[in-house]
Image (cartoon, rainbow, N blue to C red):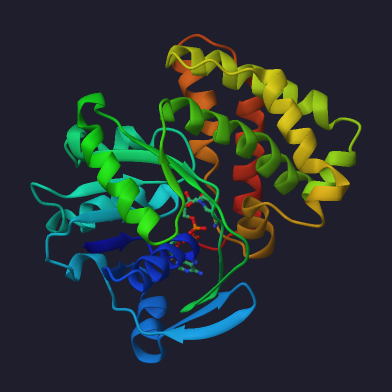
Length: 310
Ligand code: NAD
């Protein structure tokens, strides 16, 4: 199939690499010029579970790609999504499926401004990847994907995408309630990522903090109240149990969540407005008090102001 990756950072490049290896005609589309140039001049360097290889894969600026694709996979950071959708209008035709596996809340609202509902497939993924530098990604381990078409009558399209991903070893299944899956992942990111970033600690250290469960509970209670507006039920205790498991010393190790890597280590902006910020904003608009998420959002933005040069 003809597949374009819209946003070929850590995740987009990993998916592009795996889909190309499975025989698809893949193009990486990215707005970071130095990254695109490096891939075209020197190839994409891939550290695949400790084995380094350099692969040839075409990369272009999104606006330059005019050919209609069978599948477009959106993998920007959430705050770059709107610009990317503007840039890739030429790649989306009558039969193009558009898949979004990005983190965060509210992505569907943005995509719906550009793509017909029947064509939109969303999901969550447990695959991971790291962008080492321009033209260079690194990853270990494996993952999975759960996805669903947002128009319930269009599951055939989602099923085709599942087959395509599975042929590349991406371990995908059709989800029955993807909105709840997305909220649950946002609950974990909105506590673990945000708080580890603000506290400048790793997941294991966070798991040892006396205050951690109560702080997480306050944040999650607000997530649950706002999720209800979207007919999503969040079991706060269930999320707290999964957080506890993640912070368990035998499992977590000294791993820093991606928001920490982005902001504290690389001085890049975060997806906070689409996690805690989304809960704060939507809560406010609907008369639900969200003081904890409002403060977390403000603190992360303040830290961005300190660390990120525009
Ligand atoms: P990323 O930051 O690696 O890449 C996103 C975009 O930012 C790309 O277009 C990239 O080229 C650009 N970019 C990165 N570094 C840059 C720099 N120094 N200068 C200019 N541009 C730069 O994002 P990602 O980690 O691939 O995440 C994409 C989405 O997937 C996000 O919503 C994320 O939350 C989600 N996600 C990530 C992981 C992971 O392990 N990385 C896992 C699951 C979900």
